[in-house]
Length: 214
Image (tube, rainbow, N blue to C red; front, side, top):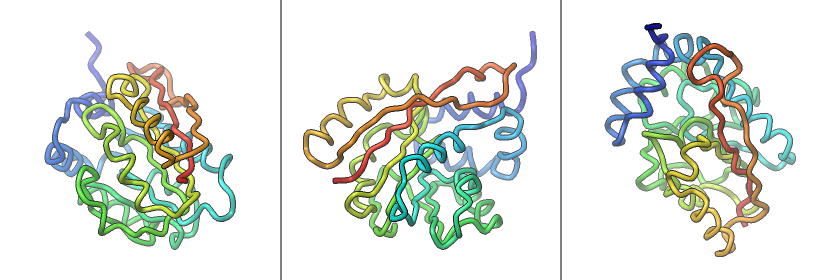
């Protein structure tokens, strides 16, 4: 039997989490090795894929950017914007500590996205997320509340693990947001999550939900 790599084990155990406290405890425990043992080892290309879609769809007014579930800052690293144009939001203090060391963000917020978002700034021209809407993490429930942190016409690029999209019921939530006039221009694009082959999750894909706040 082939032993799983540390990165694969980290990923598969992350998918088994069930509560916000589980997520805090889990990500705090391996924050210091997340980049090397997971992102680098497995070729985690998901943040770069979300950023590429943002760049393709964005206008000059689509800043500042809110990085939802920012972790150690992989989205912000790829964005390569001045730090005054990017804020990070995450539930794990230790992941935020690593992100702060990289000096990528204007502000960092420790927030449970299943609760009130009142403490987050509300001036965003774009809201991005890679890796947070997935098994063991967030379902579609925060999508509507996230509109409250953004300006009218703000661009959203929200990544959702493909296998989780139907399982967690994202489609009806998005359609209701459209019908209710909360969002417009919805497009869904499939993106790869990993650039390296040869591990159990090489073929995993995500949907990028692309829309604007009405």
